[in-house]
Image 1: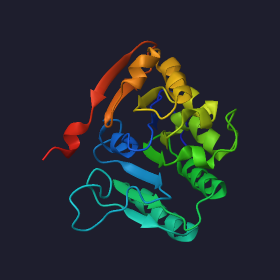
Image 2: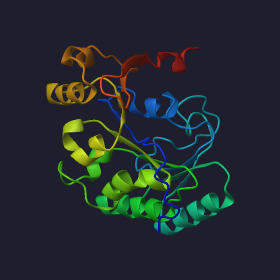
Image 3: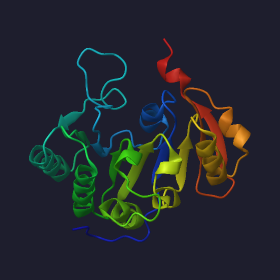
Image 4: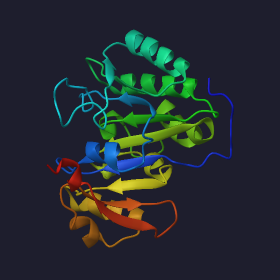
Length: 230
């Protein structure tokens, strides 16, 4: 189970939200919230971070090699070896039949492995698909968000629609990176979360974002269009 509780650790959870084509996965990789050499585990059911040999863009994680596993046993073994090595790694769980149960199993494994002496970054792609309520999340997913900070977990939930995710996720993510939204309801919710006018959210384009920092009213716009500049 989680060990070495450290209440001095800063809350670093960061939520990423944008509509289709808005650049959620790009933000996860390049918005500066991830260490350059992370210990990184990903619930990546649709292979957004699969490494493709010979592909210059859209491969691996920030261009670095990743390793994906399709079964619980294979992923658990690979994660155990990677985490035990105490070296940086980037591995993903890509189950053949992604479900909420698979996501919760993954989160439980992250919780059991967490160690207040070490940082473990955890990406959960398409979070809204695996949630069955927009209220409190009391599962292993919720546990990672509410208790993970003091045990070295840094959660990176990724989703299209903020109105479809539990309030626990947004409340426990002091950092929020918001890209262009597909509905007025989502834009309105994220404007409220960030403390900005809804027009600021509606004005966002592909690969442009608003970053909400922990302090109330501390927001900054930025662009990642340069990532794909020739």
